[in-house]
Image (tube, rainbow, N blue to C red; front, side, top):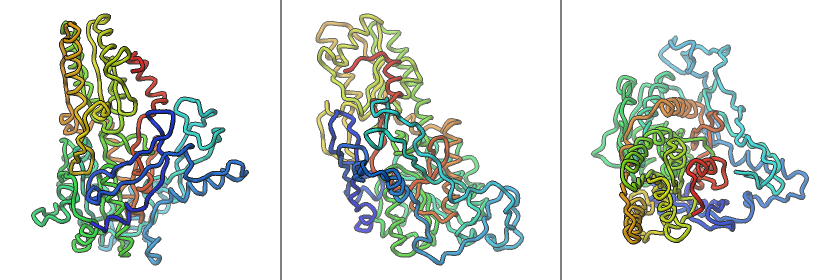
Amino acid sequence: MDALSPAIKPSVILRARSIRSDHALFSVVSLKNSAAARIGRRIEVKAEAGKHSEMNIDYSDPDWKSKYQKEFEARFSIPHITDVLHDAVSYPSTFCLRMRTPVSSDFAEGYPSDEEWHGYINNDDRVLLKVIHYSSPRSAGAECIDPHCSWVEQWVHRAGPREKIYFKPEDVKAAIVTCGGLCPGLNDVIRQIVITLEIYGVKRIVGIPFGYRGFSDSSLAEMPLSRKVVQNVHLSGGSLLGVSRGGPTVSEIVDSMEERGINMLFVLGGNGTHAGANAIHEECRKRRLKVAVVGVPKTIDNDILLMDKTFGFDTAVEEAQRAINSAYIEAHSAYHGVGIVKLMGRSSGFIAMQASLASGQIDICLIPEVPFNLHGPHGVLSHLRYLLETKGSAVVCVAEGAGQDLLEKTNAKDASGNNVLGDIGVYIQQETKKFFKGIGFPADVKYIDPTYMIRACRANASDGILCTVLGQNAVHGAFAGYSGITVGICNTHYVYFPIPQVIAEPKVVDPNSRMWHRCLTSTGQPDF
């Protein structure tokens, strides 16, 4: 258990934007999922005035911009195996869409070099992280580095195949592991990782069953993978490899990897799973092992920092439409009908917000980032009465993490170390019935929770494309010699991030963002 601590242990002091008041908050962000949960450690997120106070920028210094850019570049540089193994040898890439046939049995040296092919990514290619130049800190959604909202360029590494690789395909044994809960698209990513590995020339590919647990449980045998095995797995939901939470210590995982000869590990999971992946990467570096550990962010809630979206999110929003439409029909068909739909979103309300916008049938959208009162003259129930009196029906969409301050805290933890949330959907249903019964106002309340139906479904076309490209770029990153990275989409381009930068805190809905304002305009709800 102590082996995980080196990677989690750094007390990373970060800023946390206040989402519940105008003054700063102090919050603790739990490391979710997998081996990280076994440590019980947490990253402390301290909020201080100013969004970049951790740098202690002196804005009177005329060179503060260049200093900030250098500091940003240092934080976002991605680890490479040559950082530790200085004598690591590179080879011409075996990934070329023009020539697939090796001229000898040694793949890495047998594929002819194709320097004329312009499909490779230069190591110095970058993608711009922020694309809006806000002219004022008061502009909706502004994220300003300094009080005057100066423009500072922030560049991150572009993902894709490199002309030089650091692993001979014939020497590679690659493993894939899926952790946490189910999410649409898991099989799509697994499939594409396997297919891309085979294009590089890798012959030994295995799946680790049931998350990190599969590294230590002797009853769980690794699953041989090939294109033939994974060809049609994307046609169904779930995970071919199975999922679980928790697992062995990092030392035990790396010991198991050494015994099995695994030198490429692809980890599909959320914040906590990535914390575990980063700890595995650090342990491999400590042991001076030539191992590439690459993450693919899997969170249906879309709560990973710095990324446009994560796979499964589009499918969740689309599938949520069925539940919302059912709630609308039930409410609209009843006398004074109220439909309540609870959607996923422990700390972030992206699914509830986007599903409400997409449906056009929601009258009230409640998310974790925006506090609300249920009772009182300006509460949700008072507005529900107004809607029933004026419209005759109403539909409420609530994220699972919303309104937790209204519920009794249990202090219980799940297997991942997450706080067990109270059921806000059932609570609102019960309180709504009590309220209307208490005032003698007839109301027919219906409640729908489609969570497990959404998690278990197959990825839609949009997520299928995202999963395909994420899987491909994960393999490209590993062969390029990068480790301790995760792949994501940023401003429509695919990029590599160092894992610590994306797991520092959850991404949340900004109540001052244009998207939340659009949601409020769509629902017409007041300030609760």
